Length: 186
Image 1 (cartoon, one colour):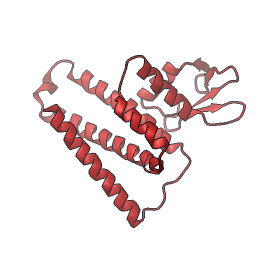
Image 2: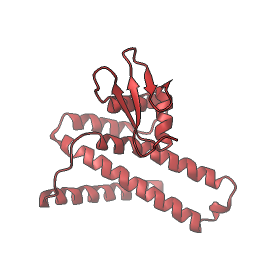
Image 3: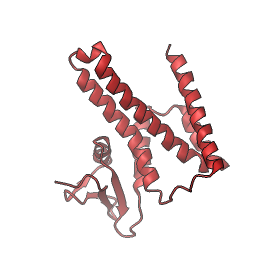
Image 4: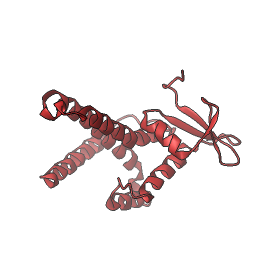
């Protein structure tokens, strides 16, 4: 059985074919997306140069889903991401996104846990399947951001007073956004 604690190593050959080193067979981008949805971390490296191509392929997977009409990212978020590449905000954006997705993942887990305890819908046939589907969706959505942060190669700087204040500001902004979103749902 494969060691799922280690990232699944995928090698890209000169022909651009992707090779799963655990199963000794070729895989597609859809296969890689499936591994990630199943909770597996992946690492994609160029066989010849040894360059880490993981980020490039994860972005390609996201772009293909978006182009097929599976829109998860609103245009305004995409615009903000593009802007962040051209401003000094790039140092804050990755940490903000990672913290946001961690909060989203934690909130989703708590919500699903509470729904099972006190929601009469939990007794309905198919509820467990729906719950599992939502959890898989959250894994798929947050896994890419978490792995991008892990593979970035940079260690977080030690937290200073300013860094702590920035994080508090980010948390406050996120709470405000969550409040606005909850008002829109009503």
